[in-house]
Structures are given as C-alpha cells and as structure tokens.
Length: 521
Ligand code: F6P
Image (cartoon, rainbow, N blue to C red; front, side, top):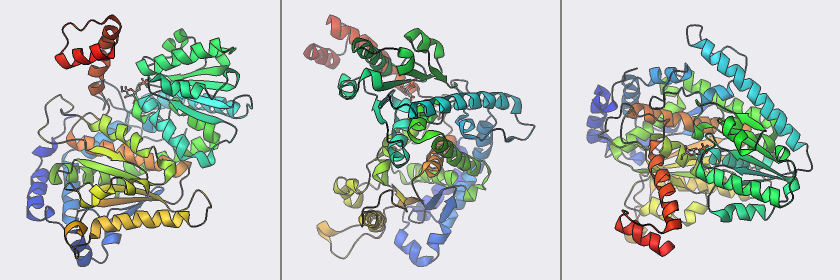
C-alpha cells in the first residue's frame, strides 16, 4: 500500500500557511472569549472516556485541515489494513492484530470480503489460549498456598501488566502479593526474593522472545534460588508467557501460555503477558479490561474522523510536533493508581514512533515522536510544574482524572480533582498583572481525559485509546510504528563489553569506553 508522505500533501502546505497566519499566535483565552461554546465544540465522549480538547491551540479551521491531512495520507486505509490483518509491520513482515485479543468471540467482525479466514483461524487460537490462561489464573487465585506472584519480564513484558495490576489494585484478590522484576540489576530480584518463600511463590517468566538478557538472567537466578532454597516442583511454581514455547521448554518450564508474532511487546498486556492481571482481577475483571479496549477499537474503526478520539489526539500530536515544534508531552495522571501510566506510555509512544526514517527506510525531513514524561498529580506540581508554568518551553500536558474516588477518605478526592482543574486552568489563563517573577504567560495547552471510574473496562478503553493515537501519528508520519530496531545496537555492544569487563581487554575501544571499563574492573 503506497501512501502519500504527509509533507507532500496539500493539507500539510495549508497547515503550514495557517500556522504562520494564525496558528502561531493562537491564544486560548481569546478563543474562549470568541466562542462561549468552545468547551462543547472541542470536547467529546468516546467509550468510557470523556475528552476535553478545548484547552488546545486549535480552532475549527485547523481541525478541518488536520482531518484533510489524515485523509490525504490514507490514514483510514492504513487503519483498515491493520484491522484486516495485513502486514502493516512492514520491516518485520508481520500483521499487527493486538485488537484481536480483545474481540469478543465468536461475533463476526469483518465483512466477508476481508481476509476473514486467516483472522478467524487466529481468533480461534486466541480464544483457546485465553481460556487456558484464565482457567490457570483462577486456579492460582483459589490456591491459598501461593502468596506471592513474581513477574519477571522487561519492556512490554513488564510495563503493561505492572501498570494495570497497580491501577486495578482496588479490584484485586487480597490473598496474593504481586512483584515485578525487570532490571538486570540483581538488587531488584534479591529484594523480592527476600520477601518470598519457594513453596508459596509463583514465578511468571514473561518474554515474547524468551531471549531477552535481563529476563533470562533474572529467570535463571530465580530458578537457582528456588532449587537451592528447597523448592519442589518447578512445574507448579514457574510458568512462561511467550511466543517461544520451545525455548521456555528448553529452560525447564513446561507450563506455558503462548501468543503470536502479530502481538508487539508494547501491545501485549492483552495476551498471555496479561496473566498477572488475570490472577489479580480474575476472569471477569480481565474480560472487562478486554471489553473496554474492544469498545475503543470499534470507536477507532468506525467513528467518523471528526469525532474519532484517537484520530483527534494523534492529529493534535502532529500539529504540536511538526508545526508548533513542541518537543515533549507531559502525562499527568491525577490518580496515584495510575502512577506507572507515564512509564507505560513512554514505551508505547517512543518505541513506536521514535524513528527517523519512513516505512521504506527513507530519511524523514520532519520531527516524529515527542518525549513523553510525567508523574502522578499532585506530586508533579511540587517538582516540575514550575517549568510547565514559567519555563521557556511550551509542553502540552495530558491530564487524566477519575470522577469517582477509589477510596473513601473524606476530602481527598475533591482536593485531587480541584488540583487537576486548577493546574489546567493556570496553564491556560496564566497571570499577567504582577510582572517579573510572578508573571505567568499562560496560553499553555492541555488535554483533559476523564474516566467515570477507574475500573477494568475504563482502563482498557484508555489504553486502547493511547495505542490507536500512537498509530495515528505514526501513520501520518509514514513510519512503521511496530518495529524497534533502535534497541538492537546497544544490546549487541553490551554482550561484547560484558566479556571485556571479565577479561579486561579494552583493545579497539573508544577512549571513553576503555577508560570507564578499566575503572569498573
Ligand atoms: O528491547 C526492546 C524490547 O524488544 C521491547 O520491544 C520488548 O517489549 C522488550 O524488549 C522485552 O522483550 P521480550 O518480551 O521479548 O523479552
């Protein structure tokens, strides 16, 4: 499928002209004054998520031009190609079908003319695996002998499940503790093992490839600890979540839950990689998570572009990155349960869209992924919000708030929500009457995403929204959002340096690496 590169479209040129004419000087305060209905005009409902986009530097004309850009870049065709199971991950020659993991079976999903057989076959496999995984999760939940579940995995095999288990703690079984070990720094694993006993611990070795150094090192140490601390029956205490069942078996793990190469690591929490989530929240909770994500899939697949929230967010990202030149986005979840959301989104966005060539390998003359960063509110306010309000760079902020509290302590939730609203308001309005150090320029954009309640379905929808918005900007930029070649170079070099750290051989190394290597020995 050939698509027009975004900067070669008429809409791109029109956006550039419009940015120079009015976009650059756009003032949010004036926009609200000019349109008393601006909130209504720039907010929308999507499944489980209400989005207020009105505090963004965008007007109806820009919105229309961005939608034209999407059309001229073939966004809809690209989206439909993904949902039809085509190999949209072109560099790895793989389909991208994480959406299939959350599609309720057996409802027909595709019109007959689409590649239905291939997808139907895959879906049957998905269902079998999901059922096996949920059955196993229920057995673990019902087993009082298991007090600790230790997930060993990194990247997508850690960030998604960890973030969701923390976010849904309110819905989790109380009988078990969950631990997530990702770093090859043995301090992490040692700290967890110190809290566990072999006979009451279940280790989940989560790795799509079952080759990742950090995970294999931690898994080997965990198995050694288990065996030397009197653990009996690896089969009952170790399970592998992987597409590489052969390697898991060779490692000595025979309880395995598989998935497929069409599930990218950062899109894998919906697959067997989600087993810790299923153990934490049970079958109904996990199914609700999938159902919420599926509702968002359907919204993305079918809603008109103008009312399609992932499309609108992705286009806004392009507008900010390529026209305003904003280089980062700050994520501010006003929910401490969502404290790992920024880390999860960092991988999702930056591993997907942190690319400098298009899907054909041609260098791109424009910027792609912004830097994502953030901390839960209100903590961030007392750390870096100073820079957001008065620093020299404009950083769009994405607030995520939850209307209903997940706890009952009086007063807390109102204060939390008040702070979220106040920060968004202060960023936009600023304060210009005091001057000097007390001057707040304002006109600083933000998006406000609101969930009614933080529960499995709404979290599923929020995460699928983020996945699809990353697809949208990646698609406009013409890049393959589903590979991650950029992580390979350092992995290879680490193998060489590990040997050199043992042998002391610094020959042929650059001066700095050689000097540090000698110091570290
Ligand atoms: O190194 C990057 C990466 O491949 C991520 O894309 C992935 O989520 C992570 O490593 C873990 O990979 P695996 O699940 O194969 O261990």
